Image (tube, rainbow, N blue to C red; front, side):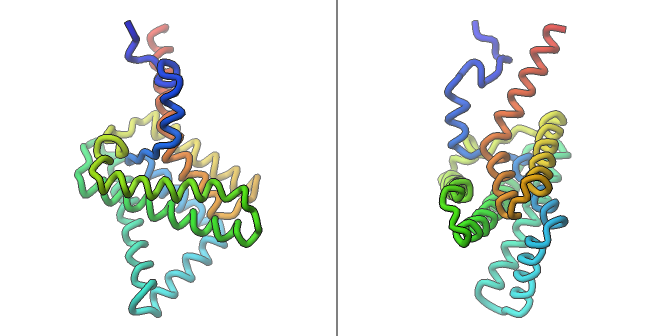
Amino acid sequence: MDDPNRSEVGTRPYRWLVRLFVPRVDELTVFLIGLASLLILATDPGMRAEAARLLLHVHHSRRGSGVGGLGAALIVVFGFGVATYNVFVIHSAEKWEKASMLAAAVLLSASASIAAGLHLWNRGSWVTMVLPAWNVVNGLMLLFLFKSRLADEGTFDDRDATRLSLAVGTAVCLGGWAICRWVVHLHWALTLCTVVFYATNVQALVTRFVESHRASRARRA
């Protein structure tokens, strides 16, 4: 009889590979993306300049992209706030909470991917445009699944974030941001793209592996 506590990676060797191609969003995913965005905004002059340009454009524009940019910024801030609340307060997320968190994740992912794509296009780095393109596809998939009412069961994970998953996710996010910013010296958009990819495609697998390993050690103790 199969042990239900065994690692998903170990019991189903191909399922983890499928999950790499199907983005999943939960409260922790949006929290990590928002946290990375705040860190990059606080430490990277390039992102601050882009944010200031957007805000100045919004301030002097009464219609068009300026209004859209302000609306997008408000959606991101609200969605990140909802995600932060859900991460630290255990309760079942309502439909509107899922929608706001998903919208924030998609907008941040799309913004970072477009900025990274333009940066790489200007440098002629065709091969390295794979990651921004991947994040754009992920965002479109999330929107399609949510609009088709498939996100509730398949794409948006309703499980509350545990203290272990929060600790692991935050540690990886901080470590990835520090390496990209201070060691590799990546463009801010590429750094955010890296965190988005981890949060939407890898984070759930890492958390499940760590939790299953911890459970196995507890049973052996």
